[in-house]
Amino acid sequence: MAPDLDMKNRIRVLRAEKGWSQADLAERVQVSRNSINAVENGKFDPSLPLAFRIADVFGLKIEDVFLRD
Amino acid sequence: MNPSKPMRRMNIALWMAPVLVVIGAFFVSLRWLSRLDDAIVLAVSAVAAISVMGWSLLVSIRHHGGLDEVERASAQFSWMWGATAGSICTVLLLMLPPFRSFIVDLATGIVALRGGSEEAMEHKALILAFTLGFGTLQVLQVVGTVVAACWWWARTR
Image (cartoon, rainbow over all chains, first blue to last red; front, side, top):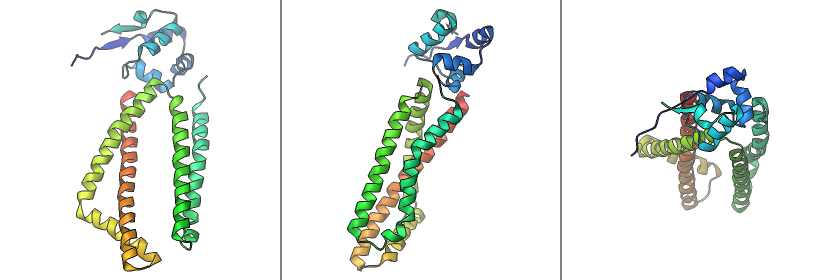
């Protein structure tokens, strides 16, 4: 079995820069606040479409939001 | 825009209301049903059961369509592990003689309330005991799913 690939993200920092709460980001990405919380804290690895949507709302490339640990 | 949490809860409550009304009406009319012919009781029970299952399926499909991928992963995890744990617990529970005796005694007691020939009562008690065993499986699967959902929620918050 392939080993798990650890990922980290910059969602918390990017949110702070924009002055958005988790609920604000959730509304923009069209998911629940709990889902944003799970992704932001690294408890859930998002699918590529969701990762792209998150990157899009920040106006960044996906690799600027999600990084290999 | 995502609806607020109270709105979502209200929406779920409204969608579940018809199921609760049918179940409530069924239990309220039990005394009346007990005086009717077996065939009519079976027909009423079947209509109530099919209505509840059909409506529940519709609500589930509609609700599932509104979930995001994290919520779907949560539902998948909860059902997979919760239902499996519930099934295992049911098997273990049914292996215990006191629980088996409890189900048989309960079924026999309920059937005895209506009376009838010994052969007919035995037949009905057998069907009821089987139904109660199946009901136990359903209840424990739901309990297992709720516990697994709570575990997922605690792990991802």
